[in-house]
Length: 360
Image 1 (cartoon, rainbow, N blue to C red):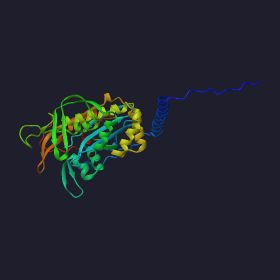
Image 2: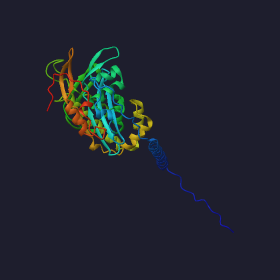
Image 3: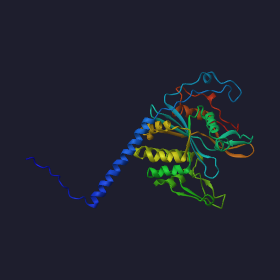
Image 4: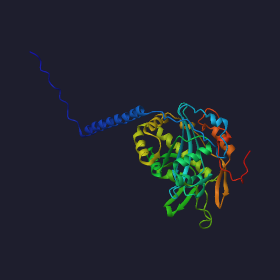
């Protein structure tokens, strides 16, 4: 007579065991979803196609372009240029402008800040003249700004990324805040903007709101006397010091984000909600995949040098006149140049006042 197989009975799960089982299932499902997003991104990823550079038929001085420019320059393989920027909350002008070149083959990233008050010859569609780079976007739009930046650095900008302040705050909070070495005393109060910045130098943890205040701080308001005599530069080298802080803090945030790849869906949501860009979805997937492998400790970062005390045409004070020779040196030696050969001086078109003594 065949033995009957009896079903073995298990004791009922306790409430704690049921909760643990449910939690395990939820975590497993989330892990699968995150993995699916990452795999999907890898499948979507396509290297962006950059059209060949088309030099102008006539240069800005009215002369034909040089022979080297006419012949065209060869781009490094899978190397891309970007303009990273953010708006001033109070004026609508751009507060931050960083040119970046990313060589995805050799995994190198170079960044250079262009001071917001950089001297240019700007004109609106209605014929109004302006002379600071930070106003180009507000008056003429992003394409005009990218073209103006091309004149300064000597190579075209492939893509732009414009982030608003909400996106920056959300990204910093999404990575859990950052430990950052605040470089200077910061004490600025502006009730009209509901802006209150107070930090002392040293390593400290910054939330998203804290990080935004640190990158915004240009002036202190705790000097002697009353307004405006109590206002002074927060950095000894004025806005150049602030751009250095901006680059360092942005690098710290990106480095921490890259160390947390499982947060990729959150980063994507923030990017889609708060960023304006001409990058397509396959471009984003490509750079997200490549960026996770980048060693941010090797990032080359600097500012374009110049004289920030220039007065230009009808009282435009504190314009920042770039030193063309120094700009050319930085472009060719920091990894910023996307070409296989050096950019030449005739490829730069930097506005000069004629009042600044150029360094040796």
